[in-house]
Image 1 (tube, rainbow, N blue to C red):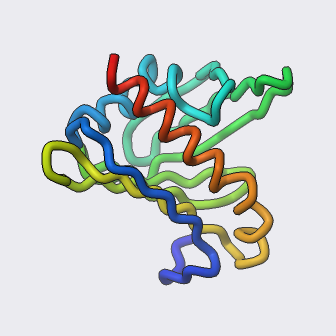
Image 2 (cartoon, rainbow, N blue to C red):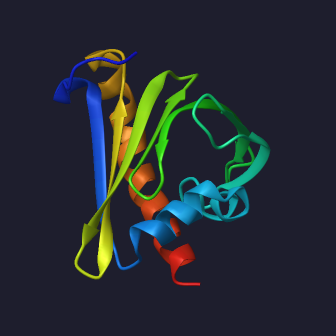
Image 3 (tube, one colour):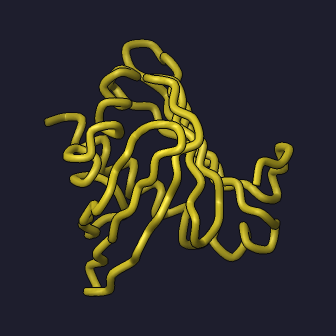
Length: 145
C-alpha cells in the first residue's frame, strides 16, 4: 500500500510528551505496557500475539466500553528503536507510521494513518481523530506512572 504522500488519504495526529523518545518507544514495544494504554478511552485489550519485529504480526482484540469486541490484525513493516514504527493494519486496511523526535526535555510523536483512498480516509476521520487524541491521553497517563 505504499503510496506517495497525499494529505487526502492521511490522518495525522501529533502530541508533545514530557517523556523521552526511548521511554515512549518502550511503552509501545513492551506488550504488557502497550495493552494498558492502547486504544481510546474506556477500551481494554487482549493480545493474542505480539511479534515486535519487521515482518512480525500483532493480533489482538480491543474490548469497547459498550461490550463489543473489535478484532485487530497488524503486521510490522519497519522498526527503528526510539525513532519510527511502521505497521500495516489488515482490516480496515491502512498503514500507520509512528515517528518520535526530540523536543526539548521530551519528545514529539506523530501518527500518520495512510488509507488506500481519500474516500476511505474521510469515512474514518470522524472516528480516528478523536480516538487518536484519547489514545495519546492514555499514553500520557501511562508515562507518568
